[in-house]
Length: 192
Image 1: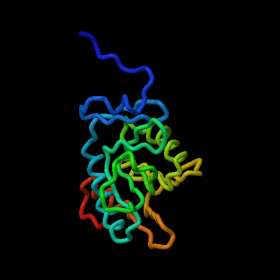
Image 2 (image 1 turned 120 degrees about the vertical axis):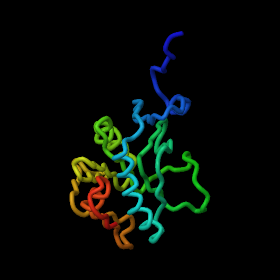
Image 3 (image 1 turned 180 degrees about the vertical axis):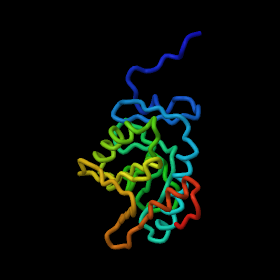
């Protein structure tokens, strides 16, 4: 018995039919992206971001923070799985089906050596084309966040205070990055 035959041209249906093997599968601009399970640093970074984003979003009620795996499609024939993402408020409190999510307020990827090219090029361009107001690439090793907006040709590289204002009528969320990365790396007390 040989290797299973893989499709030459990927589509969203073929990606969704892949086995649940612990890997993350995404389809961006016809290219299949396969990434292994995340590292501990990756997961700690996600948790540190959740601890800052979720209370803020609950207090200002401008959107909902969700975590992948998610199988999002912001356009035709794609499967996107940002590490973290914020969706606009839903008219009901029922959890949305992934197919019902057509826009994001924020997409976040935590950088890993194996995903850097995809996160910085392929995914970034896709989120920009979709009009996602902000896309963050969080680099725990470099202790910076690259912030991209739809019209940007270069990122805003933030190393001290990351400010996010999903609605101009409300106070922004301010994340002190030294504290966030100290928490990720287990360095002293965290203040978030």
